[in-house]
Length: 510
Image (tube, rainbow, N blue to C red):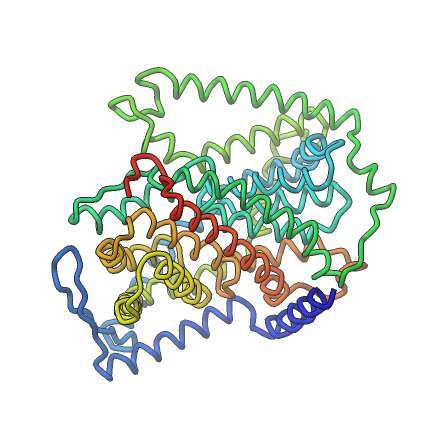
């Protein structure tokens, strides 16, 4: 019990400290200013590195972002820099259409039907599996994950904040733990191959698939334990919140809701039949010209719009059946409301887009990666200890910098050949990177979805449970123990694969 009280005190201090951080918009601006100043200092000091990329020695120097040329490039290209952020359009699209499913009442009714009579722990586990799977929509899946978390916990008569935290952590972890391969798998293996092919080792999109599937069910268990046993103590100091009879009755469906779900079910069958027609035949619309679907095809590239259309269809069908949608104007209003809900993130993405562009243009990521490579060489370790150091090193960087495939594109040319020479397969290196990147994303104060999460937390705030408005510290203080637990579990799983010599995925040869 003493250990739990220390954890509670620590997270409360972290929450207070984190909540003193400025708004994510201002934080991004401050980081942008710091980046420009740092690039000026390092460029004037002549900081540069030499590194080997596919057998060719590259010389890279830090670029002064305050130089006349760099400033002019940013100012003249400001519009294209903002437009080049591919995440924002995907989020807007999925938000417009999922809003119809949410505002019409479909999500609430469907989830209450799904969890009816199911024990709380089992419900949480199913929800965790769903949130882990939202990565198939790439970065836009964060919206679906936190919406599912808030909706299902509210339907259970439990605190939606815990559901939102589950959704956020599940979404981040889903990039290394998932059953359905996503575009991220294709992008990762392409980046890894570019560095490993010259050494006679080539990967495919499923080279780490077995590990990802095993990680999915393990991660869902970790999320369930944290949400059932740990998070209530962090939020409420160990108090168990009673569920009132009125909250229990919230899970019961009215006749109108049941009728709406039936109509939505018919709509889903129509959608499924249409997808089979467009996918199954040898030369179907969503197949490649050679008739294949994997590793990349129009079907894989259309995941976001297809799922968006599905949510729109389900929302409209449910609304027609239940009476929450009467005319087309009702659907338009729901879509507008969905965009309003992410107004903050649309604004915050502007300085974030400039920050990402400037960071890449400054060559600082290459310099940091090269210094990291030298560090790994200097410590003289290999095998599992090297992977552990690699994961911790990346985790620290993830807390302060943007991750994902952008940073892997920088680290892969440096670390994949180095680790390969030390006896570590590129697939193992890639899996270690994804663990650190996924677990670290949820504890980064500059994560682009933080404003969206805070908006949902405020929208679902029960003043009797949470007297104060949520801040960045509220999110970080909860996600830190969740990420730590996830990091330990996934690293242990990777260790088990290593020690037993298990293949990480299809075509894996150690």
